[in-house]
Image (tube, one colour):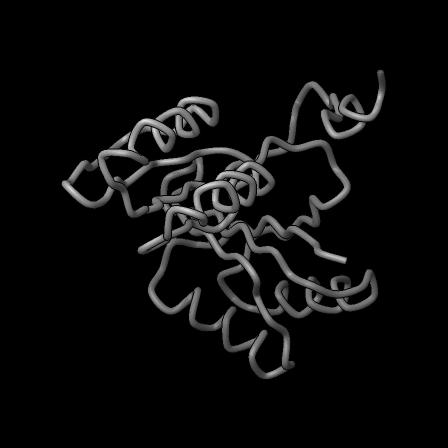
Length: 169
């Protein structure tokens, strides 16, 4: 199973390095990592996605709290959250395929951020499923490059579980 941890840390040099070192020493892989300023000055939020089981995540959480600059660790995997990623995707185009690519981009609400004779660069924002879907559809045209952020996530204060709503008809 994949787990999402939201970690608040003091915004000081070396914090991310110590966290990455902790995971490396224990042989754990970080599948997705996003770091940025939090709501409080001098504090950063790290959102990471990790494979593992409940016991492993509990163990890692305890280890994270032992690091000096870690303020708060929260497993938000099973809590209703707003989750987003950003992807820049450069795809091959020709005069013949450009219209079809733009139509796909429109369906996914992707923005064209660069246009050249033989390529088109799109900015796509959304959940990981949306990223996979547009990537799959555009792969037949030939993807030149992809750059993706890690997942960022905030807990829904409304506590509405949108994943649950998708299954209810």
